[in-house]
Image (cartoon, rainbow, N blue to C red; front, top):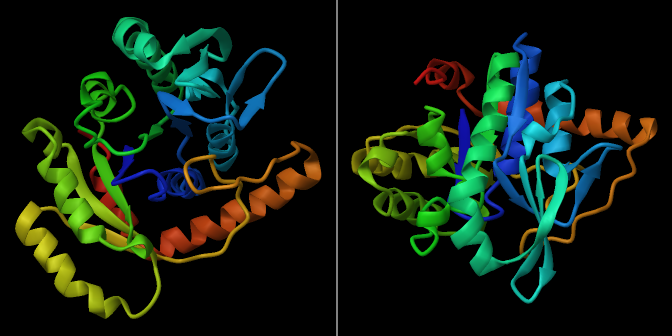
Length: 277
């Protein structure tokens, strides 16, 4: 199962975190996965370093934290350069042009798929997080974090959007319009995130979405306060985390809190039905 978003900050990371806990609670062996993540906030083990978000998702899934869960980590350095980590190990410093034109399709995609296969062998469900938007048409050729991964792993896609920002219905329709037909077919439905108010006022919009895209809305997640550290995407000032027992207990409590909200907001039975390609 893959969660993609109409933009950065749409709620992909938290939705994956919640679904990892929900399916773990249902008795499945679950692991998170994100092929490529750009973040200066990481989880460091003695032997590897991956994005903090995937480490938190692994905790939510009650599984071991592994470099397979985030095979490519980019730590921005400024001036279009990043430190590139592959399978948890420092690889090299790269300029964006070199990364896209020399690394992504030759090395990156292969490493990402191998990492995914390793997880798939050992888990019932792998919940994949996309990056940014799958409809960035200037980057689609080099995008190994969204539809290429969904296609090659035969993963159904749920598209999430942040209604608090406004324009969420247009974002969903526009995203679908900019995808290739084969990738449109991978999208099985939508999730509306960060809603406040009476859900009845959204239902005409749901009907219009279904009419235009032929895709259902799996649910609407209410705007919820929680204390799970966010990623350092645009507009966010994420908190640092110390990985001690006290903080991990607090984190586990917050994961349960948000997973309960998501479980009561989404049609989990419908999501279970789309898990097989």
